[in-house]
Image 1: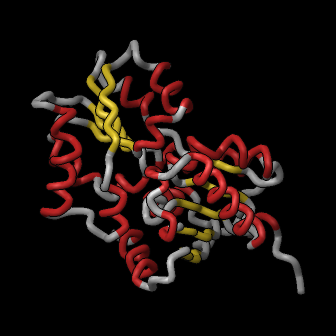
Image 2: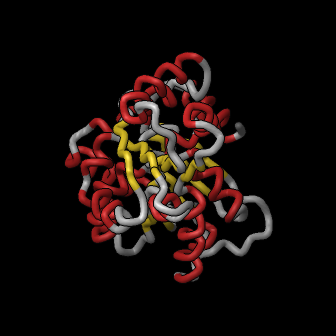
Image 3: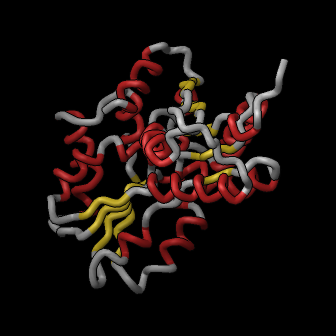
Length: 261
């Protein structure tokens, strides 16, 4: 059997569940000719409430599996897994470009003169040195309010992205940190939260600009593939395979629904 040209091999996009679909959506807009495998690890969600070593082990295992499936590159479409594991997996899988997520702190900090910036992320992301180092680079440019968002990922995993249950969750998470203050910008530091962007915007008000890292990650993926001569030159639309670690078939249906939202 003829071996598939390496450029035609798929880009693997991985996340702790449904969150990375928001990144996949943008990737397919930026690189429509590429083939993709999306792997949602809903069986292990949420990563942001786990121990760092466990997240490293899970991420390593998932990349090994997708490498065996022929992935030419891996996008870790998860802020938590990136902050915890990206250094180690890049060192281990040197033959595969691995692109991670970074919270869009820089554009948020530059959006106004010394803005107040709300950073929404998982507890584990906020604890990591990678995140603290990122914030420290811009702390003279903005006032940051870092908010650990317990329970938000779990709602998105259930398919709840709007409505009363979501509004109540956001109120419980954000009210103690806002305490009546207005904010200039919101950074969505978890790809799950992008699915809830409209609900978050309503809560913080129309004057706050909401930032996420999906487009930056897609552009970085394009740059890395071009640099390595791995871009698919096909002019047609690429194929997509959606996989999930959970045996629940409804999660594939939910994945397709969120992709087409």
